Image (cartoon, rainbow, N blue to C red; front, side, top):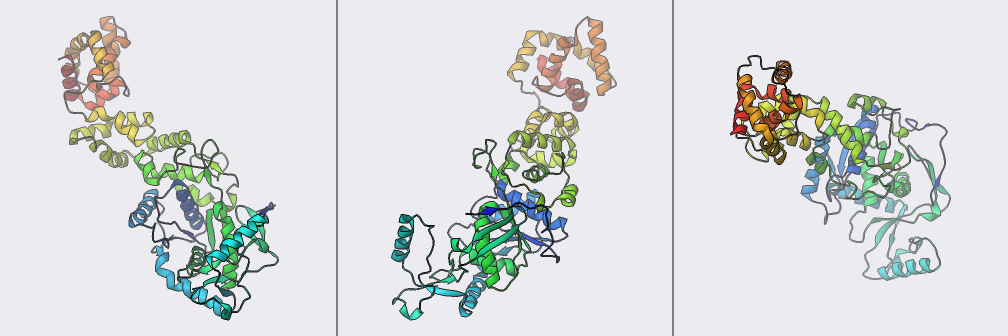
Amino acid sequence: MLNHASLSENTHKQQLFPMTVVTRFAPSPTGYLHIGGARTALYNYLYAKHMGGKYLLRIEDTDRARSTEGAIAAIFDGLSWLGLGWDGEPVFQFARADKHRAAAERLLSEGKAYYCYASPEELTAMREEQKAKGLPIKYNGLWRDRNAKDAPAGVKPVIRLRAPQDGETMLHDLVQGPVTVANSQLDDMILLRSDGTPTYMLAVVVDDIDMGITHVIRGDDHLNNAFRQYQLILALGHEAPQYGHIPLIHGADGAKLSKRHGALGVDAYRDMGFLPETLRNYLLRLGWGHGDDEIISDEQAIAWFDIADVGRAPARLDFDKLANLNAHYIRTADDARLMNLLRPLVESTGPVDAGGLKRLERGLAGLKPRAKTLKELAESGAFYLHPRPLPLDDKAKTTLADGGKATLQAMIPALEALTDWTQGSLDAWTKAYAEQTGQKLGKIMPPLRAGACGSMNSPSITEVMAVLGKDETLARLKDAVG
């Protein structure tokens, strides 16, 4: 059972490591880069940059049955898209197996580890006995003090750490505060399996040592592992890193995050039309804050972020907040950059000519305030791209059939005579035309919108007409009246 004590102040920021801070993101390539992993990477990145240090990447690919090249590529792609480029070359854990084995064998030679010949049947009996007595399920040290000459013939042993049995292990966690566990609750963990393969716990510790990791920032589901890893680091004769275990992300309903909540890969958020700066800003605020600031630039994030300021309570993923934040970044994004992002989306539905792309870019100013995702932006601007004759949706057809065609036929000659084709001029013309013909604007604007856009949902129709230009607008209106 873990005991949590409160910190009166954050005293451990650089206390143990006045040298260069080195953090690491260490995903297992068994699937996509999920949203929780992306936040962990972001926190490691920001803390390293805030402290003027290094942020490294380690691929923990020791599970050969589940690790795939596709998953590794997805991790690289996701981190790159998010703008979380790492320092130096990535480290692949499996390739370092010899170093992991050497560390275990050194501990064995120093008497800090031992061979364990317990059979599967003995381990099962051990667990059943402990379960029957209501005791914690753990290895009971069966071979801790036995002589190897007592080993059964033909049994390949594992190597276990000779962990301390008395006292307690305390971690000054940067997020959780001081956390203590009684050593009696921990057992002698396996370092090398009977086939000679290193365990995850050994590999992580040896790699952290060799990579010079000073701060381990990861999800609090690893907190229990930290005590064992801490003991192993000390046994290997090294100073332990600072730990910061961040709460996991939950769904909006407070339940453990699942696919129905949005526990998706980073690539899925990209495909849904979210911008990378949106994800960075949103994930930053999931558990950390800077007063009432909601919109935080990358420069501000690096300047302000401290892992010690991350809260202990689980954060909740809220798609509405994410979408609203994305709307802000779409509104403020550079139009040329947006077009580079939109082009694959619009071209996926069919060929698009250069004229249509230019119209869409000119029309972005009026479209951006109406969209929360790139997909919405592409869909709302599709009418700029359509070749003539423009397809009409049902509402546009109804508008034109209900007297709209006659209204357009009467307006087209007057529009053809208009020489100044700007939005301001078109605004003035529509008001003057309505007054001259004794009509309300609500009578003449819908047919214009239906004919020029093929839909009743668009930015200001005079803005659209100015973006389309005189020739394209008149051609569309003439198509509409047939």
